[in-house]
Picture 1: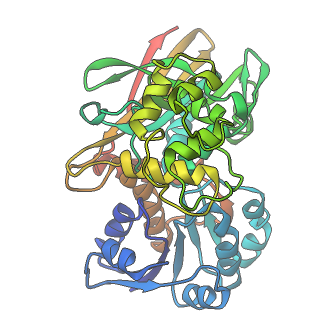
Picture 2: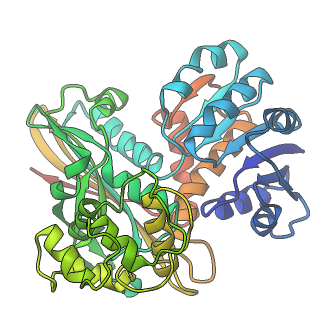
Picture 3: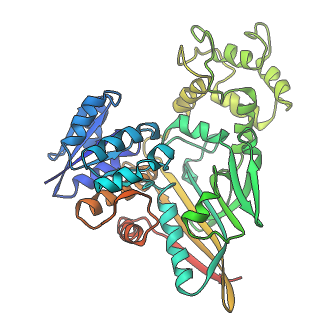
Length: 445
């Protein structure tokens, strides 16, 4: 019996843990800040255990890792290097769904020396995006072709019938992470020229993106996602003239979020004196109008943002309740935390609603005698009463990776992401069996 330690019991843990528990040779321990959340994820399974673990207690974390054969970290990325270092120390493989950042990359040498695999970016974005991209890229190479343009879009959204609020968005993962991703700087390549987008203007870079959803062409919008340039080397397409990775949202999202950013609601600095304030007073303060005593705060915000009071961004803030007299949901924290808590209370999925994950790659490939446009698309829906699409598309690739490692099918050491055929081929094959379908369309350019 192989013992697996899963660190974190958040929104994406459910599908991951239940897949592992469905394997008769696995025993799974879910460790989180609160045992009740871990118990909910385990669901009373006889080969599952829920326990409380303070990730900042390094001694307790080390003991837990040493007791298991493999560790999965579904924690925020900042905790991964600590977990990875302890995994290397005790020669335990590790799986995460997060981007490889410098502290993790620095463990490649020590992990190789210890004979340990640290498998990262095993979610959907990053994760399935890499796998489906590399599958097409290697097909093109096998036919003596090369990729000259690559554009990738990915987004978790409400299914069309659940798209019923002004933002066109609901939360299926970390609300704070969603908001702060909207102020990241971005860099991509277009016509062999690097294009830099300042995070303060990221939403203004949004463009229309047409995607066929359930047989109907739908206009979404997308904006650049961080730094796309390093993926030219990762994917082995260094001579491409376009390399772009972007985030998908429903039409109108970017304009509203840009105005919330301009008002100050995405700031990470701590708002002073949150106790006993209402949303109306706090919003007035952000608009630099004191506490808004005797003031039409909605009009003041519109004036501050240079829009009319009837503008869709003002209407969205009104719908969110930023102009009402309800008390703030927190009495301390960053300004963005106030917005996070409010959105979480107003923009969660209701019972029976479906979320949706859209992933689309667009390639231009040149061959000795022709050029081809290739489109690789995955559109997945959550299961009403079951797991969300976000939970499945993030959790299942990582779980399949765990199984491959413990079955001895990945003879790799060091820090890796799923761009090698020995990783992505079996993972994509099993995802297809689990209902995550990928369509490829090739057409003459």
